[in-house]
Length: 274
Image (cartoon, rainbow, N blue to C red; front, side, top):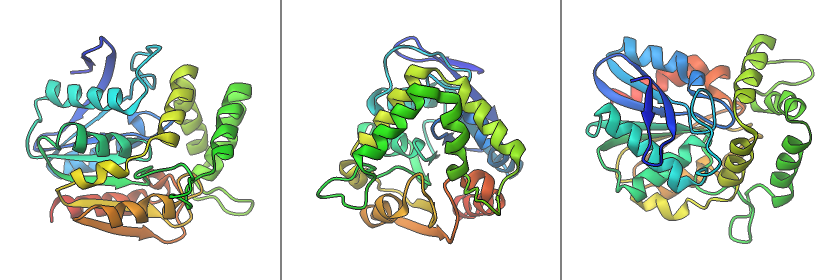
């Protein structure tokens, strides 16, 4: 099942590793399913069926002009679930932007088949700073992201991934090779999908989706996350989800799958084996 054709005819690239209870992992912006590889291998080795896919517009998936709103992206997730035949006893795990698809699936599809959920460095519940969401990201900052991408996308992402992985002047939790790898994944995406998805995760309000979480939910977030600040996301999500477990990674940045990869994998496996 390397490709799934969605209801609107978009080709979605899918990786399907292992056998056992299914776990679908949804990647963040602006990467691809390859960012989940270490966790997928660990899950498959532990007796789970790990499934990850490239969001439309990214990685090896098709790049249609339209469809980068969360309702359509969540329909893509539902189409992958159906094609994989994993409509029951399912765990959904979303990183960063991918947390939005998890939240919208829980409300739009009433959490069909889902028995547990994970939100990792997630944009849920609401990224944008507003009067009733003062800890969010200012509109000017989101506009600067769009402007930077439009002006010089390669250079923008060279700098973006330094904050993403918590790279400082003196120390770096990841290698230069990892920064290069992430940059190459970002450059696989189309310009239109990159801009439209940034608009979607920056402006979609998921607070109304939180009551639809009626399953155990693991929320992992770094306290030093500059990309998706924890006060606007992880902490609020944990307060708004009835059966949520919040684990804060003290001093950790956004890209936990790389900077805290072993710990993240252990926490996921512990949660799944609860």
